[in-house]
Amino acid sequence: MNRREFLKSTAVLGAALSLPSVFAAGTAKHPEAKNSTENGGNGSSELPVRTLGTGRAAFQVSALGFGVMGMTYNRSAHPDRKQCIRLLHEAVERGVTLFDTAIIYGPLNNEELAGEALSRFKDRINVTTKFGHEVVNGKGTGRQDSRPATIRRYCEGSLKRLRLDALPMFYQHRFDRNVPVEDVAGTIGELIKEGKVLRWGMCEVSAETIRKAHAVCPLTAIQSEYHLIHRDVEENGVLDTCRELGIGFVPYSPLNRGFLGGDINEYTQFDPDNDNRQTLPRFTPEAIRANTRIVNILQDFGRTRGMTSAQVTLGWLLQKAPWIVPIPGTTKLAHLEENLRTLDFACSPSEWQELERRVAAIPIVGDRYNAEQQRQVGF
Ligand SMILES: NC(=O)c1ccc[n+]([C@@H]2O[C@H](COP(=O)([O-])OP(=O)(O)OC[C@H]3O[C@@H](n4cnc5c(N)ncnc54)[C@H](OP(=O)(O)O)[C@@H]3O)[C@@H](O)[C@H]2O)c1
Image (cartoon, rainbow, N blue to C red; front, side):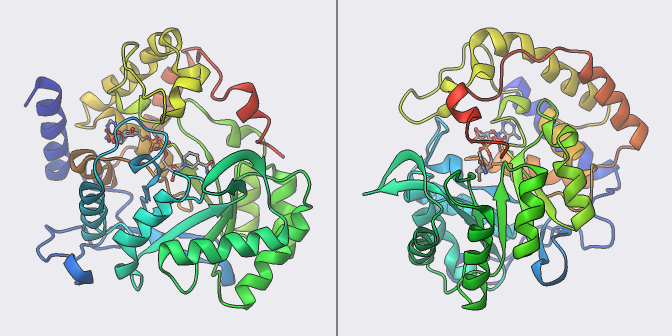
C-alpha cells in the first residue's frame, strides 16, 4: 500500500468511526454486507435515499448513484467485462439503486454491460439511460436525432439491451434543434402511457426549455455537469427552476471526470482512442497544473476532517439540496467504497461556505468543453 492509499484508507476508517452523517438522517446506515448478490439474491445494504421529482414523476433512489459510462467509454481504464460486472454487483450489494448509462456510450456496449450485470436486480434497482445522439450501424454520427419515430426506435433498442420491460427513466441526452421540445415531451408522454418508459429527464438544457417540457410531461430530473469547478447551473436558472417546479437534479461528472479525486496530474496519459478528456481544454497539462491548486484546497479541507478530496467534492454537492443525487463513476472497488462513505460525513453550512470561499479565490484555467461540445448545450 503506498502512502496515498494508506492515507485514503485511514481517512475512510476515521470517517466511519467518528462522525454522524447529515445525509443519512432517518435511514438505516449501511451495515457490513453479508449476503451475496449472485443470481439476484437480496443481500444488499441500505443507503440513505433521496427523491428526484414529485407527484407521478417521483423517483426514489440511493443518495449516490453510479455512472456506468467509464466502464466502456471515454475513460482510459477499462477493466474486463467480468470485473465490471463484479463491481456493479458490489455497488448493488452496498445499496446503490441508481445506475446511469446511455445509448451513445460505446455506443451500445455500455447499455449491454448494464443489462447483463443489472437486469437480474430490476425489482430493486434502476438503470437510467439516454437517447438523442444519432447512432447508425452501432456508430455515433455526431448528429442529434430526437424525432418521435427515432425516440420510439431507440426506446425499443434500450429495452432490449437493458433486458427490461420498461425503462425506469429515459433522458434526452442533448437538445435537438430540429425537433420542438414539446414534440419530444409528447412522445415520452405516450411511451409512459404505453408502459414502456416510467419517467423522463433532460440533460444540459436551459431553464426555459425545462419549463416548456415540464408543462407537457412532468420531468423527474435534469442531468447536467455540476461540481465545485463548474457551477453554471447555479447561475443560469436551472437549479432555481428545478427547485420551483419540484424537479430533481443529477450532477454528472461530479468529480470533474476524476480530476477532483486527486489522482490526475499534468503527466497523466489519456487513451487517445477512448477518452474524451484529451479533447477537453480543462485537461491540457497547463490547465491541470494550474487547477491542481483547487484539488490541494479540497485535500487540505478534508485532512482535518478525515475526508478525501473525492468525499469533500461529493459532500459539497449533496449538501446543496436534498433533491440532488450525484452519479460518480469508477472502475475500482476502493473508489466505490470511498465515494459511498461520503454519506457518513457531516460539515456545517459555515464550513462549506469556507470551502467555497477558498475555491472561488483560485481562477479556473481552461473551458470545460471544446467549441463543438459547447455548441450542443444550453438550449
Ligand atoms: N448527461 C451527460 O451528458 C453526461 C456526460 C458525462 C457523464 N455522464 C454520466 O456521469 C457519470 C460520471 O461521470 P464521469 O465518469 O465523466 O466523471 P466522474 O464521476 O466525475 O469521474 C469518474 C472518474 O473519477 C475516478 N474516480 C472515481 N472515484 C474516485 C475517487 N474516490 N478518487 C479518485 N478518483 C476517482 C474514476 O477513475 P477510477 O475508475 O480509477 O475510479 C473515473 O475515471 C457517467 O458514468 C455518466 O453516467 C453524463
